[in-house]
Image 1 (cartoon, rainbow, N blue to C red):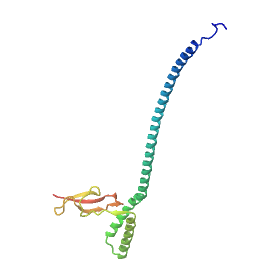
Image 2: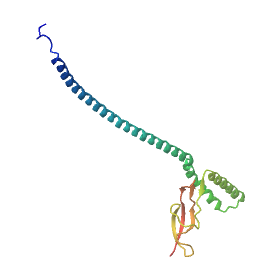
Image 3: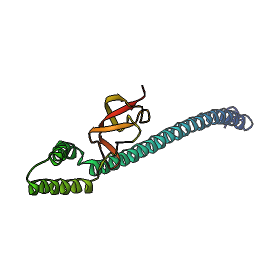
Image 4: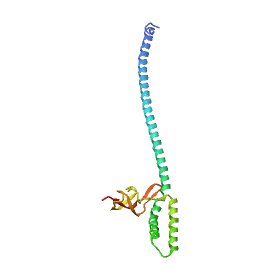
Length: 186
């Protein structure tokens, strides 16, 4: 083989080394870009994961609040479910009170009315109905409805003198305010 056709041993490895160096540099840049892309993807996924965890925790808290509110409303319905029925019965109870106060010649009739009133009153008390004791007490706008204001120098200012219609509470909650007459100083 002529000398020209022989590859130059000194030039060939140098050429391969230069090519390898350029390829390695290019390969190194590709690796750096890939690493940066992977880091950016990882950071984005971490953010998304944090957002999803936050949303999950918020939804769990909302669900827990909803469950507690439903339980509370259910308990109120059970406890105060008879409220409308009791409100409808209050005028009947008022009528019994007025009927008992009327004098009658028939003592047995009066006694019967009194017994019916007493039994009905006891039954309503078992359901949680309580009469508001108003006469002689200080006027409370949360419990009393003032129908009349009367000058009375012998009674303290804003004291309930008399009750026109009895008020009631149901398990501590106002069912009907008492209609009252209130004393004022002249």
